[in-house]
View (tube, one colour):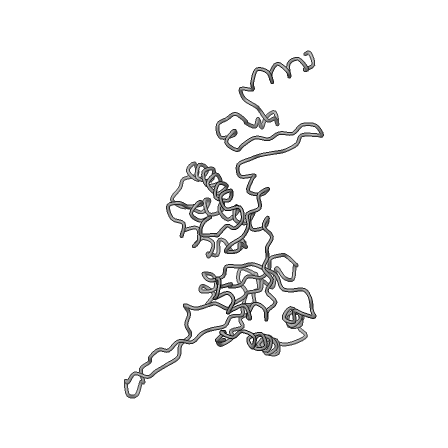
Length: 302
């Protein structure tokens, strides 16, 4: 079940904060604080889901699963609606086929997971959930409404997380040597920056994956679904944050109150700009004659 959720989840968020509108966070807090037990909590949550479902004409519900568990010293609460599908079984006495109903583990359209550890520390986002596309998303909206799921839309956060995840992915590749990883990281950052520039309004993870790993985009998608990427929280789609991804190809900074520097990452790669660790100095190689002359004219005599 946890594996199915990992491959289905596509959104990050928080719980609504208005107690007059968002009842589930209040119910959850009562349970986490020990004021109510698990059974009372689940019944209260089911009531909220049931009420929200009344307004969802095409919703077909299911069996609600509530699962609290710990993984890598982090506590989680998973809530999902399980669907049934018709199947067949064998009667042990007569060996005849009998119709059965089984849980359909291929369908998980209504599910949400609260990272209780992050919630306790007020670290956002602490909520992940499944959000369908287009019409499917509208049908399952009742579930997210009942649990007060609020999409985490921080563009800067998602952009930073994607860049970190992409770099972690390159570092995890066993098919590359250390030197090859350094080169691939440099090339990947260039491809990813171009991808974000080409998709300034909405970037889909699948599109980013094609830029991060052109030869096998599915490898990056699988990486995001693995335990290695558990700390990365990225929505299926988001708007890239330009000041953040701009750092992939453009470096800017200030030294003191009057000196501003700006150059492309390519200038470092072509050795036009370098850093001297012994002198703690930025070196501009092969400056134009006019710039050299101006510095010499205004420099103090030795």
